[in-house]
Amino acid sequence: MMNRILTINAGSSSLKYSLFDVENDKVIAEGRVEHIGGGDAHVASHASAMRDVLNGLINNSLLNQRELMAIGHRVVHGGEIYSRPVVIDAEVVEAIQRLIPLAPLHNTINLACIEVTRELFPQVPQVAVFDTAFHQTMPEHAYRYALPENCYRDHQVRRYGFHGTSHQYVVKQAALHLDQPPEQLNLITLHLGNGASMAAIKNGVCVDTSMGMTPLEGLMMGSRCGDLDPAVPFYLAQAMNKSNQEINELLNEKSGFMGVCGVYDMREVHRRVEFGDEKAKLALEMFCYRIRKYIGAYCAVLGRVDALIFTAGIGENDVVVRRRCCEGLDAFGIKIDSQLNEDSAVAIQQDNANVKVLVIPTDEAREIFEQTLVCLTPNKQ
Ligand code: ADP
Image (cartoon, rainbow, N blue to C red; front, top):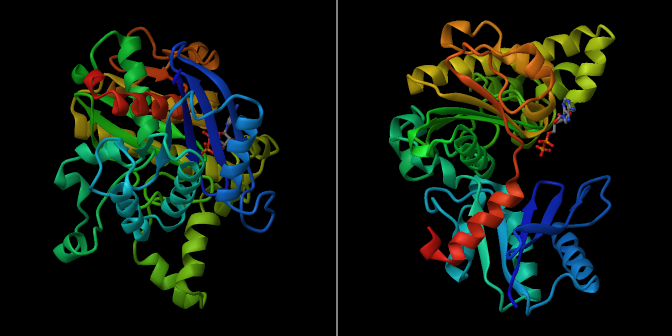
């Protein structure tokens, strides 16, 4: 019986997979391959990691053609073409290929995984769930950059936004928690992991987000700089005599926490703060300050805010970051209760606060699974 769905979430150097049993709505196998490609690689490429994962599942009798209903792939860039998941056919593959210039590393990796899964399971439907899709509801005044029009018309330069599956998942969960339909909710979602982004959600749909044409814009991140005066890269290229490629690496891989205090992992940042490391203290304050600025901006965008939602590695676990991101925001109705925050309760606002503050663990695999299922059974939509 066809009752299994495999989800694939491939990042720049990792590949996560989850195998769901549709009948019982349960994960029956999951795992993660790390250190793919690059200098310290354990696995040469995403294609070989994908093959290893599939063969491992087949050899353990968890996966076979008869039971596998579909494979859902997270695909990073769907451009303006996709605002919902699609069954992958030749035309979709071609579109993902065409979008490679907008996400050179990620879309190439996603295509490599799709190729391997199609090769091993040619009869099984494959679904693409785009990271950008959830943000396609943004109005033009929010997604356009103030550049000459042909940059947008001819070169697709605009804000797309990322982490869409995560923002979408926590919106659905918040609606369940608040016992209100998403269409009645105005929310600010904070996905704070190694990569970090925020979104303003009005009546259940995204109206603005902090990441831009690429995931580099917006918040300060593990190794990405986030918002920056656009003149800085040109200045640095000249001052440091660096190539475009080197500047790109500097902004994406050597900046953020890594650039300011020498480590990218938030737990390590806290360890250093405890030892009195001034650079780590500065990095932490820069991170929280920028988040507070975005919260203020999104309060203005939304007018009324029902809830703020913290998610991902830092958002779900970091008591200090949550406290500092909400500090001084009483005027906006945002007041968190220190004990509830310490306990990482689901709702951590004070009783008399106008805005709920929720801590909701993200689950991108489940969101990919649910979207894949809906895509295959359209009458469920
Ligand atoms: P990604 O999926 O983007 O790699 P995650 O959502 O797993 O990222 O988040 C990773 C970040 O979460 C790291 O900076 C890590 O230090 C941080 N993190 C994880 N657990 C904790 C914790 N208990 N306290 C503070 N930060 C944490």
